[in-house]
Figure (cartoon, helix red, strand yellow):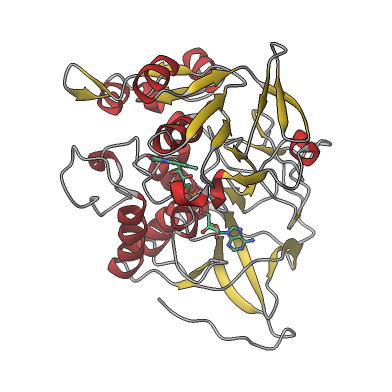
Length: 379
Ligand SMILES: Cc1cc2nc3c(=O)[nH]c(=O)nc-3n(C[C@H](O)[C@H](O)[C@H](O)COP(=O)(O)OP(=O)(O)OC[C@H]3O[C@@H](n4cnc5c(N)ncnc54)[C@H](O)[C@@H]3O)c2cc1C
């Protein structure tokens, strides 16, 4: 891993391509760019690759088995049918950088991206890069989201977002309300039930899917039937995209096996009491918000957003020549934001990068029609 040193702001460093973000998406595109022999750099804000995985809770188990967790060119180690933990993913991604000697600059947070000199200026605190093309791979789960009702709870109620949760020790003894009926809320509620009185508030029910069916993993079926690669352009893809799934757990199992008490959507709070959509209430000692994330593209000063600041793109390709996104949820398929399938979009973007010819600044370019995909951004 190469360390980049601050240079004079007035003399930008030039690269053909700059990749922003050193998670699985940034590394996957890095692999293809290295294969093309391209002059590029991956800029990663954190001091290590795979920063997002390192911030997840200690006991996290992947819902995808090892056989489906490999990035292009390097299989995920271990028993292909095992479900690796968080640290195994962080180690694998770090090894991936070393294995392919990818040019990653750590501790390099990008502050702005704007058009300059027919390409892009990518500014950090201490230096600027100029590039013909830029890939934004800053992750689908960036900024923790907590609903506004959290502010109405007393200071004595301990509150944390799932990103702040590590293990049951993070939560004081007593009653805890987990808010959020997705995979994160279910996994954390089950873990806490060994030591706490746990309540789970489910805002919208997600379709429960078993992890294994007739001895085979769910993703084997998704891969074999081709469902994992159904794009949002197809009817079945659009139907799948509109539905969140709960893998390997269900409200029934959580209630019966783990004794977790289930509640409707949390709609209000006052003092230490949370109210639910059916009019019931609960006094709580702690609240764990497993309420998801928002993307933050506020540092991108290029007109690729609609009036509501939602990104407009087609499979990650924007109307701004040479600006791409990678790793977004349902960027193209269900696999777009998963370890084992991000390579499909990465390869697609790499092909676009290869086919790109820089044009003179004042030369007109017919815009592509990219409105097919719109990805939400709260910024
Ligand atoms: C709880 C949880 C469990 C999951 N389990 C699975 C699973 O079992 N299997 C699976 O395949 N997927 C799983 N996923 C989904 C997905 O694989 C991960 O979210 C993955 O981390 C996404 O990779 P990414 O590279 O797109 O983004 P990230 O891993 O978020 O990487 C983005 C990187 O960009 C950096 N960055 C951000 N902003 C800047 C900036 N301005 N300048 C420079 N760098 C920046 C960040 O530091 C980060 O390292 C899970 C997700 C979550 C939240």
